[in-house]
Amino acid sequence: MTITEPGNPPPATLRLRIDRQAIAANWRALATLSGTAEAGAAVKANAYGLGVAAAMPALVEAGARTFFVAHWSEVPDVLALAGGGEVAVLHGITGEADAAFARQTGAIPVINSPRQAQLWQDAGGGPCHLMVDTGINRLGIAMEELGHEVIAALDVDMLMSHLASADEDTGQNARQLELFGEAIAQRPARRLSLSNSAGIALGADYGFDLTRPGLALYGGVPRGELEGVIRQAAFPEAAVLQLRQLQPGDMVGYNATFTAPAAMRAATVSIGYADGFLRARGPVTALQYQGHELPVIGRVSMDMVVVDCSQCSALREGDFVQVPFNLASASNACGISQYELLTTLGSRFERA
Ligand SMILES: *Cc1c(COP(=O)(O)O)cnc(C)c1O
Figure 1 (spheres, protein in one colour):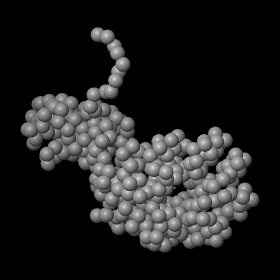
Figure 2 (cartoon, helix red, strand yellow; figure 1 turned 180 degrees about the vertical axis):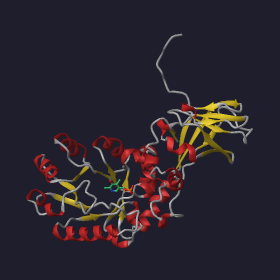
Figure 3 (tube, rainbow, N blue to C red; figure 1 turned 45 degrees about the horizontal axis):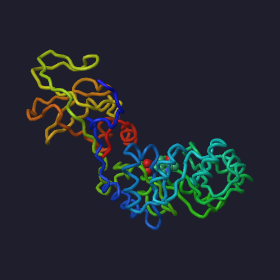
């Protein structure tokens, strides 16, 4: 056999169907809930695992113009699809190379510390955003640093803060809102931004000039107010690789955690923990085929999972089965956060 150019691989046995209309509808719903504030879009981590190639056109068409990523490495792909909109980088300026890349691409750094401010100014400065910490203690300058000379010298387009617990009813939300008000009084900026997806549902006080939804764009429901408003946007499906007959006493998978109590039919399906179907989902998840439930039996492997298809005689090798991905209910069932369910999806899905 002569080996030639590898060309395109054959169709994948693992697909992620992306409902672009759902993404667009979710953005519009969040924009409406944002009131007078503009809604941006957090598209970090490859649009939370859905893929920027699928998500960005839907978001741009719906009207999003301000995009947030975490890393500079995420800028080229997002910028290319931003439709002339702007891209902000949440990790800010960690070294001289970041500043140079910011100037070269026009992506806007979110300055998080006096050191970052100094690095940005040393590189020539220019418009930036400024993150002030109001209680999450993760990234952002401290309230006491707002008056620092190097902070005062910044050309701040947007003053931002980030809510720690907006998905909960807790006093921390109001405390962060109050502190943000104090920050604004000390360091005014052209624009103000506080809320993530859950923050948008906390009401108009939390909207300011720009909101930064992420999770809910992709189908996540972090608060009850968003139930029935946000639509599922990602639908994983995986092919049956093999069907087998189990005899009573046959054991399935690594460490033999399942033993067939009776004769049964089992299907080996092309999705595993490397595709975000983590082991914690196994015991609480049934895959689906034409309305039939296919409970997972045994441990989830890296590339495969075995399901009981005794009740579904129509299932054949090569058929695609559905993987439940209602984020709120899947998260409730297995204890993995909605964010982690999305961002661990992995790169082997054919995203269509
Ligand atoms: C990720 C992120 C967001 C989006 O948050 P969601 O909870 O996904 O809506 C907004 N702002 C900042 C600073 C973030 O890091």
